[in-house]
Length: 382
Ligand code: SDX
Image 1 (cartoon, rainbow, N blue to C red):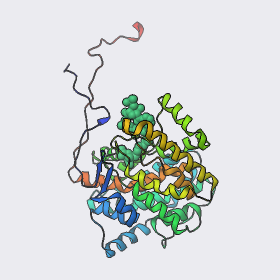
Image 2 (cartoon, rainbow, N blue to C red):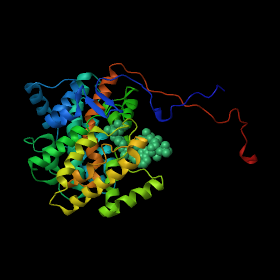
Image 3 (cartoon, helix red, strand yellow):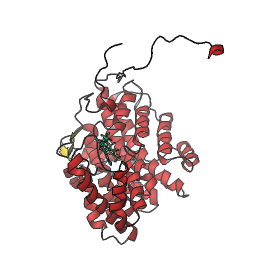
Image 4 (cartoon, rainbow, N blue to C red):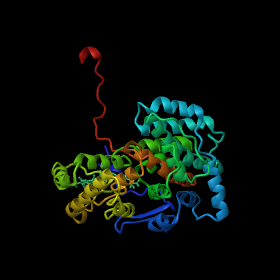
């Protein structure tokens, strides 16, 4: 037996590839997509333009963006056979399981399915970005016992998502809120779901299989599922005056407060800062529920930052402030993580195509510490 090697549990701190898509500075709390600061993109760009930037590595000209938009808008309709399976499944299964299943059906209806050329993969990526948003909205309709709403190609990506979810054209404000939230969730380097996507694709499987694996990974509460868990915590706290005691009890019980902490950010997550800015307005919301959630959230942030921020480098992450924002535009809690998947689809596809340019099968080692050369004991002697 070899000497026990140093084990980087969970691949913490391990560089497994090189990428030009996102730069995350965990100490300064900075995030860049293709060299552009996230703050600049959230303020000036659209989700469609950010998708183009992440996929092609540059901001599009007007003509390029028009052509990209045309492809996105004409890829929104859900195939009736896929919709039938979703209708059957969505009432009973977790929305992320229905979404994962629906995405994995798509190769059966895509002439490019098993063409792994970069051109075909780019076409499939654009279709996936549209399909996953339509499917997320459709799952919301089905679980609400409502009829499917067909897409409206006159609306923006975020506007159409809200239209397909609510059956009514959204206000400009609501569409812009979703647009910014999708920009903020679009890409984040080698997070668990992106790494999972790449690990699956590194076997030279196909992009549908790879992103299906990514959706499976995103579901967990340590990753994309934290946004739902964080809102559930706010409801569990109930009233603003309960906040401090609830957090103290959680920390005393060594419970993880969802929406806080990060494997890479040891500073305030820049995306959380941008989302928190929405809460300044939501404090004066006309909805009592949103006002209360916002008050609880701001108190929870304050005590968590005092207790764990500077001391342990545990700060709010992208999932912490999403709750009241999504509630304010009518997104049901159970669609938070599917909406995260709808945003991150572009990051998964871009990283997968980048990795395939210099593919290397992902196959790390595990250190075996069990017994060896045991004697087989027949059943009669066990
Ligand atoms: C996302 O990787 C990405 O980029 C992900 C993401 C993306 O865009 O793709 O940014 C999206 O997934 C954000 C993270 C969402 N998850 C959560 O909010 C779940 C709650 N957070 C924790 O589970 C945790 O912070 C992780 C999983 C996010 C990261 O944890 P690590 O790096 O594995 O750190 P750890 O669990 O080993 O914690 C180190 C210490 C521990 O204390 P000690 O045992 O050393 O005393 O910090 C404590 C932890 O108990 N800690 C927390 C905490 N997170 C860490 N204590 C209380 N509440 C927390 N949230």
